[in-house]
Image 1 (tube, rainbow, N blue to C red):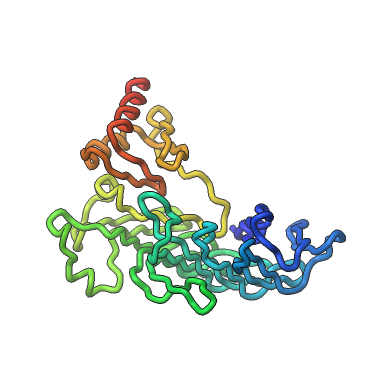
Image 2 (image 1 turned 30 degrees about the horizontal axis):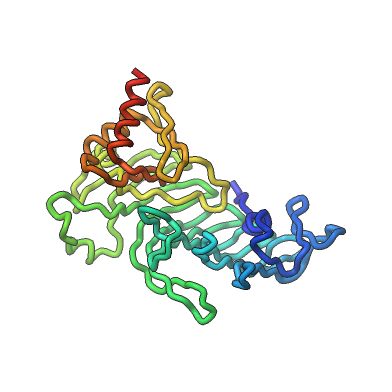
Length: 313
């Protein structure tokens, strides 16, 4: 499906925080219009913060975004870096998103490590190669952060007309028990080491292979349970409206809603969740990550889980 997010619309909904040049822009019937007569706008558009830091550069022709679009990465305002080409309001060619590498406390803490996602588009639809990699950023002469070093490839796959197809490779950066504290030579010699391979047909998984370091095949169900805290999830479906994630549950009886450490409601399978907590989080306090959510596993949290389990029974 074509992308539905309009980067300008997100900012104009918080108009008091940003300055649009020119002002008096409004979106009418999918087109950007100027003034009280709602005439489709043609010209350069720039968006600044109230502290005069540039946020967006783009060109609009007859009310539609055209040409190179750039949204500068800004950790203070929690804005990802976005860059790519628009043709008649549709993404075309290679697009890149820059997001911060998440930390235990806050995804938007200042950090040199960033996640860069690259997606190829054709007439507004994802079509072509898709990659995610970690990278370092540095500031350019305009004090904007730009990528300088490709640090580690995490995901690579392929879209065909908006659907995932073929082999998708994921590097969850796991280590086996016997070399947990040692970085194996194999990881240094290979440009990309994958721990999961998923084969898609029109976004449906038709085959999957999982392996532990290095080339040791493991059943994917066992892999998912054992390395649940390390599995890398694609941060968001770029260019589409984000929805609350739900962990797959086998049936409604096992499904429970639990708040994560950020206060978000998460629906998950209580039996599977408790089994993982008991097996891999027997410390006094630790952090568990799952489907983009984080949970503080401590005595209070364990008691709340057991209370839910007892009330179900």
